[in-house]
Length: 144
Image (cartoon, rainbow, N blue to C red; front, side, top):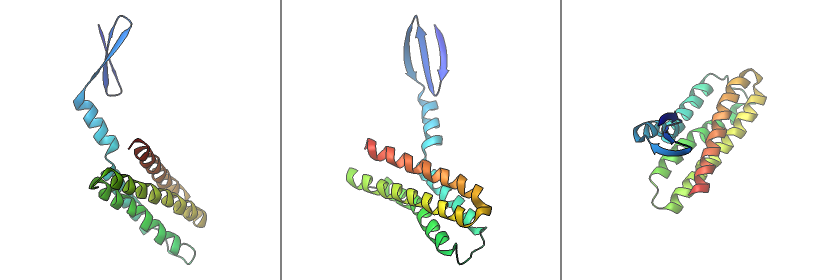
């Protein structure tokens, strides 16, 4: 018998057959690190706040920044509400709002990067996280 460790699962190989056996502690730790959406959305909001603080406000970017701040911080707030949903329908509704806010955030980052080319790299990093959150919320909706 050989033991192989592969992406949080232990696989026992006997002849040509593979029998997956869960390593519950490792799986739980991996899931908590990767999929703690409450922390991830909170960290994203804080990153956006810190990023926005360093931008010089102008007539051109003022409204974009306000909208960006509102949509970016709304993702985490709506996720907190989703965690306390009263029903499956309520949960899906609140996760749908999270998805809409994350998608809107990508829009504002796109506009901000065009309006302020000097900060394009920072916008790109945060845009990517907002996009990943959009995909995560889409997957949750599709599986619920």
